[in-house]
Length: 188
Image 1: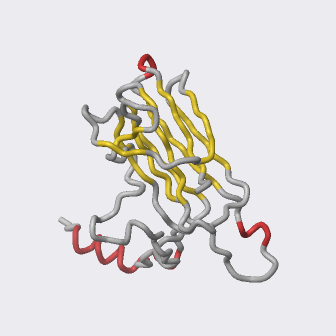
Image 2: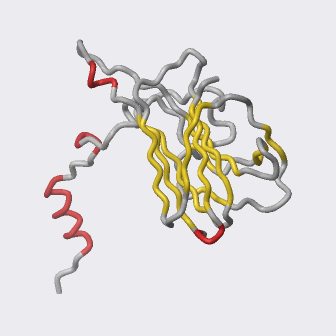
């Protein structure tokens, strides 16, 4: 339970404000000694809005990141009401270890404060009494409700979760283009 967490304080005079945060881990390919792709530790970032009380947060997530075994994890949200937002970085198991983690936070307004520390106690979740002060700004982290187990990382499919490759492109060639033009155009 020594997972990192980050507190972002957005003053009321700095809204509306967009916040984008990323957690990056050391690229395991940098220490490769043999062929193969070492798998990164999946990191799940969740953003909670603070409600009244010292350790009390809304049970409605503002947003979350994808939970994939890739190097980076990110969240993006738009703040419409000043307040405090907690980003919790969760690892898949208590024995998981991340080497050299980097946290980056970008805000569209000045005076946004960010603090980092280790989680020392569980946070309490409560039903909010007012509308949320922030909303998700990205489709990252969206899942079908019945899609995957929310308590486990999503497995990576290297055929579909990779960069675009030339073999994915359709090679229609010039003949298909000439045929399409001849079908669509009429000569008078």
